[in-house]
Image (tube, rainbow, N blue to C red; front, side, top):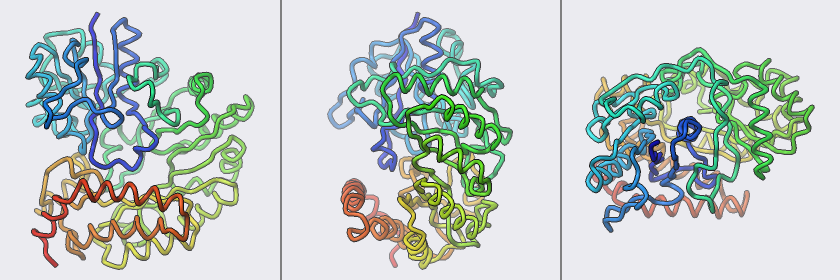
Length: 437
């Protein structure tokens, strides 16, 4: 049997870093391999570094395995390539496999740093990818039709035992019927949603409780995409009196179902992460969000009425946004008493419609993938300069998390922003030199 190391490369800025959320794909694939008898480890580079180029240091364990699998998002691709190249230099016989969103759409680029690139989903192909030495090049992983047939993810394969996830990660579905212009989910997983059986999900929740978790986070891109199924899951959680609070991501349309909101409250939902994206009606149309400003207001009010906190997620920089949009967004958040907010810069991910549009218009001015993390401007906005948009991003975080509003959030946000500014001095200087006001 093979020794297999999965690596989740780090990116320069991760607003979810505090929670130490692992990638679901690496754990699921690693569990399949473990149950097949392989020796599996998952390294999270963002939690504990596996490579330091300046010091010439590489985690020793990565040189003593048979196969290394790297799961890459666009923002972590460059770091992943560096790690893969470093491993090959020290141990050229190790098979390097790459998968994830970025290699799916940039496979010809990724294969320059790997023996095998898997496009799409990996469950159906992972055993062959690891066990078949002759399987190399670029292959397509078929979509998984039955999510329930695979084992419950085994978190024990995570190597950072002293720094486990703060919340249990659970994924219950794949796919999204919507087609937001900046998103790659529907392109990657399809617009037809697939679901795990409710009983299988309940079994996983009970396992996480037995492992000591007090909170869990549903990784689903839209937790309530099938409202009747979601209701059945919540009813089962209530009947079993599961002692765990939870959070999830969804759209504003959850507020249109009173019964769903009541069940969420009874089942101990603590926070909903809602993709509001913008308070500019024109931007909502540009993003193809299929929601209105009234939908956003109604969602916030009704979630609060049911004792559920609201984490609003906003994306700045559409062709309809101007210098006043960030200020109006923060003002709206304060007026609506949103509990917490997350501001990201629009970034054209390979595989998204936005990427194709901006690339064809010649508006993408850098393809340095490490900057594609939602905190750097990488394209020319229509109604602002890139530098102005970058400044509005910083303004939004600082203005929303003000000292007067919440001293604790203020301290945490300033700590994160200061780290970001320190790490990005050269990037900001380059932006200023390139796009002077």
